[in-house]
Length: 442
Image 1 (cartoon, rainbow, N blue to C red):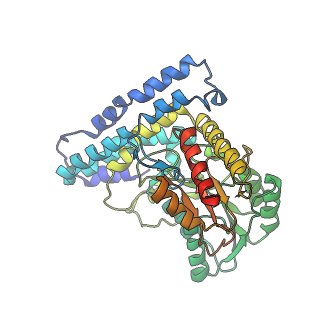
Image 2 (cartoon, rainbow, N blue to C red; image 1 turned 90 degrees about the vertical axis):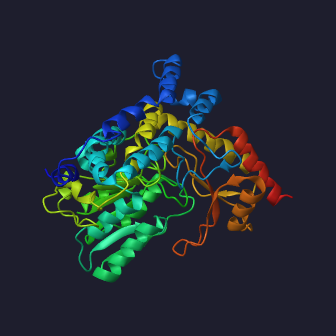
Image 3 (tube, helix red, strand yellow; image 1 turned 120 degrees about the vertical axis):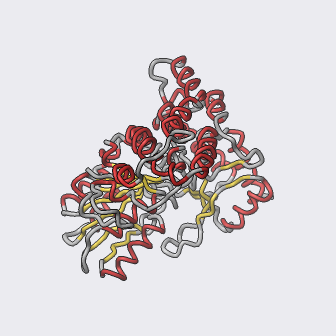
């Protein structure tokens, strides 16, 4: 199989030795992970299994995790649903990689991909996702990954795509472009807020899937509400009708302890700079091998490139960013998705319980039941302008949250999205609740 790796090797010519060899960059990234090693030791001390529930409220442990990040000290960041900070070691590798590459890019660009990204980084990411590395394509974000499928899948006029008003806007933009360009039909669902159960959500999708359905888009979870979907059940229904399924995993990759293939989908896209904590500008596309040949790439690759390598070609790019994902992936491997999810569910329960007590009118867009949400919580305060409240929290209290407002497809969404990270402290969440209460009851 011809890949970007072999294409670069065949066109680069005879290259001189790198001043900083890519293989050395990879080794140095691993060597910097003293934090990971220390955490591994602490996990062993806590018992053979280091059960996620046992660590969820262990503040000294998560304070140790926090030491691995260079965070803005005067801001309580509760907007990790947009993008997570990357560990300090990854930031240092980005800077080091940029300096090394830009000193002699004509030689060093061609080495970085085959010696670091296509080998070490690919193996680490494949392990995190529970799939073979040959089924992955490195891209820049979830939008690029998912739009590759949405815009590249062969569809004809009259073919139907089932989607939701709560899907990410960029995916819906791509679908609407295909409707205008190719005449496809969109069956856009409007999920209840909050959803009463996973069964109710599954039934809504099952009712919309019909004989002309060719693709079902599932967002897992919605960035607007935090609502998880019963992806496997819906995927099974879609396949029974002859349709394929693409999953937007931007808000779940790194949190849900389940191999991607177990979701039952055909295509899966995610950003690595969210809950995996890789540097900004890294993403992944996965698809079942039998589909790789029929999807048109966003950027046509050179002749001879086959398999998932067809979706990695974008021309010259700053590959040192993807190479610097190694520290984040190693930290994730140490913590594990289940421990991270347990921590975030604990923190979500913590602040929501206190917010509900202090703000009785507060309305939450998804249940905190483990099967219903993880990591993201959107809360509406009736009569309160969410955008103005977001700005007031940032400017007066030094608290960063996201205002989920102004979505023309889902105007019913008008709340504040709160997304802590594993290293967020209960004290920081207490600050949030106190600040909210002071606005509603000055």
